[in-house]
Image: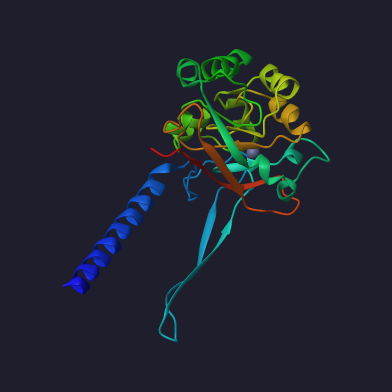
Length: 267
Ligand SMILES: [Zn+2]
């Protein structure tokens, strides 16, 4: 009788433990938000860059009787969801593999400018947008990875709607229309704040109509990297989440394909 009771208790305990493990796994799934577009033939690249190419090297049953798949891919560094390393626009600054990990992993700030960007596709993010976040959160953006939500991720991968033009080549660059960071806001970020990195859900941290890429040059001179073509940010709160943004570690790279996710708090 006693032994039966012990056995029942042990079974019940095991059951409870496995339920708790399953619940923890479900929580972990719910708490991670993927902020990355997949790479395929529809992935958006800069008009002057070749698109993503995947060639199948093997896909089938081998002579030895097991299944085997392997591909080769080819990609410009700056296409799809990607990193801009500071050296992209600032000579002598960090290349992809030199960026300290603390700039790629850390607490996030999500600054939502989607209303302004829906009204004006050439909207330039201003200092007041960042100050509004700081006022509402009761803290500065210091030490954060700052993600700007323009809402343009919802237009991906429609080139007309996302970039402003579906044309390719040098002449298409003048036809780009999407929101970005104003030079004044970039300058204020490096002079008045210390952010780890910045990210945006458009093709460039500079607005589409920019010709001299001031936001890139100002941020990168201070070794602040950027994440571009970030996917939908609408599931993120304004603060209280961590960002993990790990690019392919290309030695001497000016950027590279990026997997970026956000970790939301429990509950
Ligand atoms: Zn880039």
